Each structure stands twice: as structure tokens, then as C-alpha cells.
Image 1: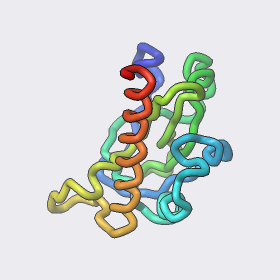
Image 2 (image 1 turned 90 degrees about the horizontal axis):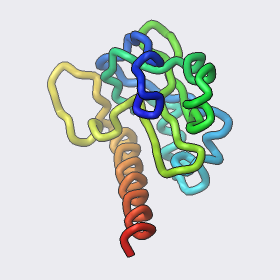
Image 3 (image 1 turned 90 degrees about the vertical axis):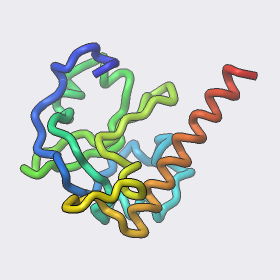
Length: 150
């Protein structure tokens, strides 16, 4: 929405309080987030187990993304998921050039949010995914600070 400067790209989405797996797009293996440095176990958990906590009422559909040149020229889709109505939404994106990432799921919730009556996954594998994401994003911040603040 920030890149586009509009909320017009968002659709209603039945995506509140459910956990799901993600489906990797072919270019995910070439990405910074899910590429060669990502542990194979984390990629397996993401693809085969419901380890992503979803709490959203709006999402971006792949057709909206690809129809918009501003977005499709700046980002690449790394993964998609299905909402509670089995409609596809984009779950992970990455800038093609810059260390900018977006997830339509909450990697932080797996280890830190323990509310009753919720579907947040707390399995060992879900927490492993959360830790990988935290380490990856922390490393991105370190890289940026090395570039600009030395």
C-alpha cells in the first residue's frame, strides 16, 4: 500500500485467526529471504505445516499485483496462501532490488503471543520458523547499518 500510495490494491479477505502453510513461487529459491541461505528445514515447515499465523481482513490477490506495473516491477511474489474461503492471496513479497520485504502473516506471534482460543501455532517447528525470520530481519538491519553508518 505504501509503494502504490493507495489501498485500492487490497481485497476483502477471510484471513482472521487461522494458521496455514505457504506455497512458494518458483523464484523464491533465488530470493534473499527463502534462497540458498535459508535452512531447508524452515522451508519445509513453511510449505508443509500450518506455521503461519494470519490475522487480516484485507489482502492482495495475485491478479491485482500482476496487473499493477508499479508493484510488479518493484517486488516479486515469493509465496501465496489460501484464505478461509480457499481464495489465493499473496503471503510474502520481496523487493527485486532493495532489502524490503513484506509478509501477510505474523512470524512474531508463534513464540510470543499466548492468547486462549486462538489458532496461533506454537509447535517447535512454528517457533523455529519465527526464529529464522527474526534472525533474517535482524541481519538485514545490520547490513543496512554497515552500509550507511560506517
